[in-house]
Amino acid sequence: MKIALMDSGIGLLAAAAAVRRLRPDADLILSSDPAGMPWGPRTPEDVTRRALAVAEAAARYRPDALIVACNTASVRALPALRARLEPDLPVIGTVPAIKPAAAGGRPVAIWATPATTGSPYQRGLIREFADGVPVTEVPCPGLADAVEHADEAAVDAAVAAAAARTPADVSTVVLGCTHYELVAERIRAALQRPDRPPLVLHGSAGAVAAQALRRIGEQPAVDAPADGSLTVLLAGRETALPAAALAYEEGRLLPAVAPVR
Image (tube, rainbow, N blue to C red):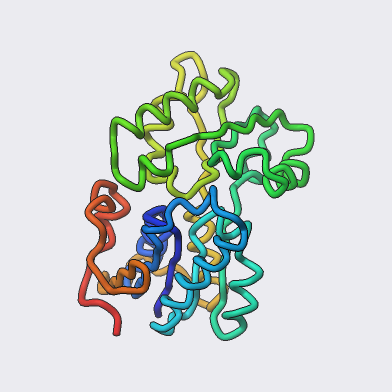
C-alpha cells in the first residue's frame, strides 16, 4: 500500500505521521513545493498550477491514494486535482476541524493563515458547523513560515502574537493550517491558563489519515510490521527529508527503509 501526501512544505508531516501510526507498513510518498511555499498569499490560479505539479510528481509513483495535506490547496485546487487524477487516484482534501470543535458549544478560536482568516470558505464552514457558537478567527502571520524553517524564536513570537488575539474565555482552538499541528504543544502552552479547563486543540491529521484508508478499503493495523518506506520529492526530485522536518517528532517518526520505486 502506498499513500502519497502533498503540501507546499513540511505541513504534510502531521498527516504523514498519522498514516504511519495507523499503518506502519504503508509506503509514504511526500511531495512538496518549498520554493513556492507559502501558497496562501498566491492567486487561486497559481496555487492550482503548483498543486497540480506537486500532485502529478507524486502520482508518477502510482500511490493508492493522495492526501492534500494543505488547507490552502484543499480550498483552491481540490476540484482541479480531482478532475485531473480521479477516479484512478482517490484524492482526499483537508478541512479545518470546525465541526467537532463547535460540537461542545463552547467559545472557539480558529487559528489560520491571514489568507484563510475571514475567507468566504472559512466563513461558510463557520455558518454551516458553528451556528450559534461564539467563534473568533485569529490570523497567525508568519507562523507557517517559522514552522517551515524550524525557527524556534520566530515560532514563539508568532504564537505569542496570536495568543494575544485569542479571547481569554476560549477553551477550544481549531488549528486551521497543517503546519500549526507540528507546534501544537507550544500553542497549548501559550493559551492554557491555570484557572481554566484543559485547552482542547483540533487538528485534521488523524481524520484525514483515517479517511484515506477508508477510501482505499484499508483498515488501521497499528501492529503491522514497521517496514513502510519513505520517498521525499521536492519540486518533483527525489531527495532526503529536509533537515527542518527532523526538528519535529512527526518528522523523526518517518524515516524507514529504502525509498519506493
